[in-house]
Image 1 (cartoon, rainbow, N blue to C red):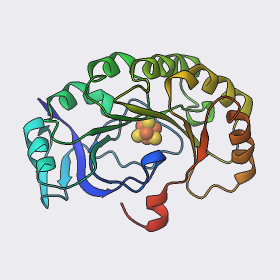
Image 2 (cartoon, rainbow, N blue to C red):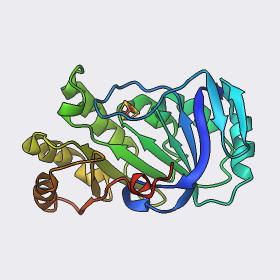
Image 3 (cartoon, rainbow, N blue to C red):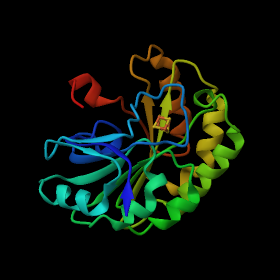
Length: 228
Ligand code: SF4
Protein backbone atom coordinates (compact mmCIF):
# COMPACT_ATOMS: atom_id res chain seq x y z
CA UNK A 1 0.00 0.00 0.00
CA UNK A 2 1.39 3.41 -1.02
CA UNK A 3 0.45 7.09 -0.67
CA UNK A 4 1.54 10.53 -1.80
CA UNK A 5 3.07 12.21 1.25
CA UNK A 6 4.57 15.69 1.13
CA UNK A 7 6.45 15.58 4.45
CA UNK A 8 7.10 13.65 7.65
CA UNK A 9 8.35 15.63 10.63
CA UNK A 10 8.42 15.80 14.41
CA UNK A 11 6.93 18.79 16.23
CA UNK A 12 4.28 19.83 18.74
CA UNK A 13 0.58 19.76 18.00
CA UNK A 14 -0.29 23.42 17.51
CA UNK A 15 -4.08 23.24 17.31
CA UNK A 16 -7.05 22.01 19.29
CA UNK A 17 -7.40 20.48 22.74
CA UNK A 18 -4.19 18.44 22.60
CA UNK A 19 -2.09 21.51 21.91
CA UNK A 20 1.53 21.07 22.96
CA UNK A 21 1.82 17.28 22.78
CA UNK A 22 4.75 15.99 20.79
CA UNK A 23 3.87 14.17 17.57
CA UNK A 24 5.21 12.85 14.33
CA UNK A 25 3.24 14.47 11.51
CA UNK A 26 2.56 12.54 8.32
CA UNK A 27 1.31 15.15 5.85
CA UNK A 28 -0.51 13.73 2.84
CA UNK A 29 -0.20 15.60 -0.43
CA UNK A 30 -3.72 15.98 -1.82
CA UNK A 31 -7.03 17.43 -0.64
CA UNK A 32 -10.59 17.17 -1.96
CA UNK A 33 -11.40 20.76 -0.93
CA UNK A 34 -9.96 24.21 -1.69
CA UNK A 35 -10.58 26.42 1.34
CA UNK A 36 -9.99 30.14 0.88
CA UNK A 37 -7.64 30.31 3.88
CA UNK A 38 -5.66 27.14 3.08
CA UNK A 39 -1.96 27.58 3.84
CA UNK A 40 -0.85 24.01 3.17
CA UNK A 41 1.65 23.47 0.43
CA UNK A 42 0.49 20.30 -1.31
CA UNK A 43 3.64 19.01 -2.94
CA UNK A 44 3.10 15.55 -4.39
CA UNK A 45 6.27 14.81 -6.37
CA UNK A 46 8.64 14.33 -3.45
CA UNK A 47 8.34 13.47 0.21
CA UNK A 48 10.69 15.25 2.60
CA UNK A 49 11.27 13.01 5.62
CA UNK A 50 12.77 15.28 8.29
CA UNK A 51 12.80 12.49 10.87
CA UNK A 52 15.26 10.39 8.86
CA UNK A 53 16.66 13.40 6.97
CA UNK A 54 15.83 11.95 3.55
CA UNK A 55 14.01 13.09 0.43
CA UNK A 56 12.09 10.38 -1.39
CA UNK A 57 10.13 10.23 -4.62
CA UNK A 58 6.39 9.59 -4.13
CA UNK A 59 4.53 7.32 -3.58
CA UNK A 60 5.71 6.17 -0.14
CA UNK A 61 4.92 2.75 1.32
CA UNK A 62 3.04 2.12 4.57
CA UNK A 63 5.98 -0.03 5.62
CA UNK A 64 8.35 2.95 5.27
CA UNK A 65 6.10 5.15 7.44
CA UNK A 66 5.74 2.34 10.02
CA UNK A 67 9.53 2.13 10.33
CA UNK A 68 9.93 5.90 10.70
CA UNK A 69 7.36 6.21 13.47
CA UNK A 70 8.86 3.30 15.38
CA UNK A 71 12.09 5.23 15.78
CA UNK A 72 10.74 8.26 17.70
CA UNK A 73 9.43 8.90 21.19
CA UNK A 74 6.22 10.90 20.80
CA UNK A 75 2.68 11.12 22.20
CA UNK A 76 1.00 10.12 18.94
CA UNK A 77 1.14 10.11 15.14
CA UNK A 78 -0.77 12.89 13.41
CA UNK A 79 -2.16 12.07 9.98
CA UNK A 80 -2.74 15.44 8.40
CA UNK A 81 -2.83 17.07 5.01
CA UNK A 82 -4.07 17.75 2.59
CA UNK A 83 -6.84 15.33 3.47
CA UNK A 84 -5.78 12.08 5.18
CA UNK A 85 -9.13 10.37 4.60
CA UNK A 86 -8.21 10.24 0.89
CA UNK A 87 -5.65 7.70 2.12
CA UNK A 88 -7.79 5.73 4.61
CA UNK A 89 -6.68 2.36 3.19
CA UNK A 90 -3.06 3.42 3.54
CA UNK A 91 -3.51 4.51 7.19
CA UNK A 92 -5.04 1.11 7.98
CA UNK A 93 -1.83 -0.46 6.74
CA UNK A 94 0.51 1.61 8.91
CA UNK A 95 1.65 -0.39 11.93
CA UNK A 96 0.03 1.08 15.01
CA UNK A 97 3.01 1.42 17.30
CA UNK A 98 1.67 4.68 18.78
CA UNK A 99 -1.82 6.22 19.09
CA UNK A 100 -3.23 7.64 15.83
CA UNK A 101 -4.45 11.25 15.66
CA UNK A 102 -6.52 12.17 12.61
CA UNK A 103 -6.80 15.77 11.38
CA UNK A 104 -9.56 15.76 8.81
CA UNK A 105 -11.98 18.03 6.96
CA UNK A 106 -14.76 15.48 7.72
CA UNK A 107 -16.25 15.44 4.21
CA UNK A 108 -15.53 11.81 3.23
CA UNK A 109 -17.82 9.65 5.38
CA UNK A 110 -17.33 6.45 3.35
CA UNK A 111 -13.58 6.70 3.89
CA UNK A 112 -14.10 7.56 7.59
CA UNK A 113 -15.87 4.20 8.01
CA UNK A 114 -12.72 2.37 6.95
CA UNK A 115 -10.63 3.71 9.83
CA UNK A 116 -13.19 4.25 12.57
CA UNK A 117 -11.64 1.49 14.67
CA UNK A 118 -8.06 2.61 14.12
CA UNK A 119 -7.99 6.24 15.24
CA UNK A 120 -7.65 7.32 18.88
CA UNK A 121 -8.04 11.08 18.43
CA UNK A 122 -10.08 12.94 15.82
CA UNK A 123 -9.72 16.67 15.16
CA UNK A 124 -12.58 17.11 12.71
CA UNK A 125 -13.50 20.29 10.89
CA UNK A 126 -16.84 21.95 10.54
CA UNK A 127 -16.27 24.16 7.49
CA UNK A 128 -18.05 27.48 7.22
CA UNK A 129 -19.77 28.58 4.00
CA UNK A 130 -17.38 31.51 3.53
CA UNK A 131 -14.41 29.12 3.30
CA UNK A 132 -15.86 27.20 0.35
CA UNK A 133 -17.39 29.67 -2.12
CA UNK A 134 -17.32 27.27 -5.09
CA UNK A 135 -18.88 24.22 -3.43
CA UNK A 136 -22.32 22.84 -2.78
CA UNK A 137 -22.11 23.89 0.86
CA UNK A 138 -25.26 22.11 2.03
CA UNK A 139 -23.88 18.83 0.71
CA UNK A 140 -20.58 19.47 2.52
CA UNK A 141 -22.46 19.97 5.80
CA UNK A 142 -24.50 16.81 5.24
CA UNK A 143 -21.30 14.80 4.69
CA UNK A 144 -19.72 16.44 7.74
CA UNK A 145 -22.59 15.38 9.99
CA UNK A 146 -22.36 11.80 8.67
CA UNK A 147 -18.59 11.75 9.27
CA UNK A 148 -18.96 12.97 12.85
CA UNK A 149 -21.57 10.29 13.46
CA UNK A 150 -19.12 7.63 12.26
CA UNK A 151 -16.08 9.02 14.11
CA UNK A 152 -18.03 10.16 17.14
CA UNK A 153 -16.49 10.81 20.54
CA UNK A 154 -16.69 7.62 22.60
CA UNK A 155 -14.79 5.57 25.13
CA UNK A 156 -11.36 4.93 23.59
CA UNK A 157 -11.60 7.76 21.07
CA UNK A 158 -11.50 11.50 21.72
CA UNK A 159 -13.26 13.49 18.99
CA UNK A 160 -13.58 17.24 18.95
CA UNK A 161 -14.77 19.70 16.33
CA UNK A 162 -12.57 22.51 15.05
CA UNK A 163 -14.12 25.52 13.32
CA UNK A 164 -11.63 27.79 11.51
CA UNK A 165 -12.96 31.33 11.40
CA UNK A 166 -12.02 34.44 9.40
CA UNK A 167 -12.89 38.02 10.47
CA UNK A 168 -16.43 37.82 9.02
CA UNK A 169 -18.86 34.92 8.87
CA UNK A 170 -22.54 34.12 9.29
CA UNK A 171 -22.78 33.45 13.03
CA UNK A 172 -26.32 31.98 13.06
CA UNK A 173 -25.42 29.41 10.41
CA UNK A 174 -22.37 28.21 12.38
CA UNK A 175 -24.52 27.78 15.52
CA UNK A 176 -27.17 25.87 13.59
CA UNK A 177 -24.63 23.48 12.01
CA UNK A 178 -22.85 22.99 15.33
CA UNK A 179 -26.19 22.00 16.85
CA UNK A 180 -26.34 19.08 14.38
CA UNK A 181 -23.04 17.59 15.55
CA UNK A 182 -22.91 18.53 19.23
CA UNK A 183 -23.81 15.01 20.38
CA UNK A 184 -20.84 13.47 18.57
CA UNK A 185 -18.03 15.64 19.96
CA UNK A 186 -16.23 16.28 23.24
CA UNK A 187 -16.22 20.02 22.59
CA UNK A 188 -15.92 22.74 19.95
CA UNK A 189 -12.71 24.62 19.25
CA UNK A 190 -12.95 28.01 17.55
CA UNK A 191 -9.70 28.60 15.71
CA UNK A 192 -9.14 32.11 14.36
CA UNK A 193 -7.38 32.33 11.00
CA UNK A 194 -3.79 33.47 11.71
CA UNK A 195 -3.77 37.30 11.95
CA UNK A 196 -7.48 37.45 12.87
CA UNK A 197 -8.59 40.97 13.82
CA UNK A 198 -12.10 40.47 15.17
CA UNK A 199 -11.91 38.67 18.52
CA UNK A 200 -15.33 40.05 19.48
CA UNK A 201 -17.17 37.92 16.93
CA UNK A 202 -15.32 34.83 18.23
CA UNK A 203 -16.29 35.65 21.81
CA UNK A 204 -19.91 36.16 20.71
CA UNK A 205 -19.92 32.81 18.95
CA UNK A 206 -18.32 31.09 21.94
CA UNK A 207 -21.05 32.49 24.20
CA UNK A 208 -23.78 31.16 21.87
CA UNK A 209 -22.17 27.73 21.52
CA UNK A 210 -21.63 27.37 25.27
CA UNK A 211 -25.40 26.91 25.52
CA UNK A 212 -25.08 23.63 23.64
CA UNK A 213 -21.52 22.38 24.35
CA UNK A 214 -18.17 23.26 25.92
CA UNK A 215 -16.44 25.65 23.48
CA UNK A 216 -12.87 26.96 23.54
CA UNK A 217 -11.04 29.59 21.51
CA UNK A 218 -7.57 28.27 20.65
CA UNK A 219 -5.31 29.89 18.03
CA UNK A 220 -2.60 28.05 16.08
CA UNK A 221 0.05 28.00 18.81
CA UNK A 222 2.84 26.63 16.58
CA UNK A 223 2.62 29.76 14.43
CA UNK A 224 3.14 32.02 17.45
CA UNK A 225 6.11 29.89 18.50
CA UNK A 226 7.53 29.93 15.00
CA UNK A 227 7.76 26.14 14.74
CA UNK A 228 6.57 23.91 11.95
S1 SF4 B 1 -9.41 21.02 4.03
FE1 SF4 B 1 -7.45 21.73 4.92
S2 SF4 B 1 -5.87 21.11 3.44
FE2 SF4 B 1 -7.87 20.95 2.39
S3 SF4 B 1 -8.06 22.92 1.33
FE3 SF4 B 1 -9.11 23.11 3.31
S4 SF4 B 1 -7.54 23.96 4.72
FE4 SF4 B 1 -6.47 23.17 2.89
